[in-house]
Image (tube, rainbow, N blue to C red; front, top):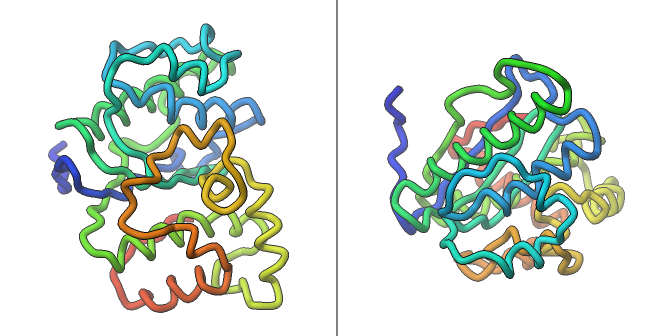
Length: 228
């Protein structure tokens, strides 16, 4: 199938995918952690190594020390949800996004099939993509990605009023499966997943939940497809 979006080095892209029939893609804490680590482990231009049993006990800092290959993409932001995920990527090598996503999806599906003695597909194919072709879209996307987990405590972002601001902030500060903690709380081992220095804006300026919601509201007229 010919992909409508043609990836170019140096450009930003919104990459997202979900479970087949909107089914869950994470069934245990270990699954969430595995996928998050694979965002780092699979992002290098070496041979495909879907088995990660040799690295599962290593920190990401320890794994980085043994790296000699270039990374496929820069990961600016991400979030993981029970049945889908969002990534904000910039292509570093020609064909990098396609290679990275192929390695990431293959590694995770093999992990899940082995762990749960299952067969067949887990997520939709092909993965979805949108070119981030404006600063407005970039700001909106960073905001949406980091607010997305709030949907687990509120049925929609529209219901997140000012009165729930503190609740939402506390939830996001303790939500480990996104890049929110790395920008707005403190550095951690998982911060190595990100390339913070290539962002055209200071993402940390958007920490306030009200400011984040305003970013989405101000761009509400743009044709953005949401997936929750």
